[in-house]
Image (cartoon, rainbow, N blue to C red; front, top):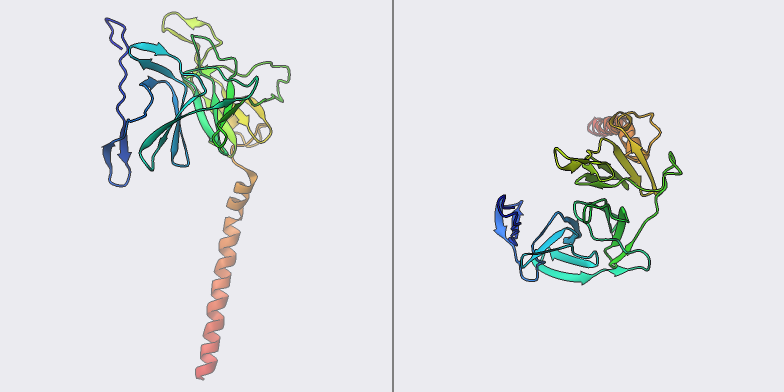
Length: 256
């Protein structure tokens, strides 16, 4: 943004970093969307899905509708656009500054803002197979009467074992900080459990406490594998020793 004219300049350059040759390459921009920012880009089976954000086309600022999905193939270096189907009553509103994670073939977007307001649907999911949006319903076991989900922008979202951990960012429900020009900072952590469609507000101390009453970010099966690893190694070692002993005995008897 130009500080004197307040004009935002966006570029439609497309660069690819080759992790094998460790060099940058210029990507194809034929069929690419108009320049945009504050959107999400999610990789699904070699296809990157671009959702939301703020778009600038011929100096005109607009908010792309959530039905406007652009896809980039990392394999063929080509762009394509598609219109996501919207189930009746399940139309997520436009937004920017949101997050996105991939949950078993569905892109889950969370939070964001539109015209300085929180979106009506804090969370929505795009099925990448059918290109259909849906609005999942989450309940809070700790606060069953809590009517709405937290409203965040510029936060992080990380998926671990079908549980999404949301942290940091700004809380759009808090009052505006006139000095710094942003709304209140978010000091909480949130867990969205897609196994049970439940969400929790938690703290850093509770996340690191094994006895806390919140969904664990790692499954018990993973823990079981880790806990049984010493036993597996011990049994394998005993088996190898016995095998060597038996082979040695056979050779000794044969040559004797």
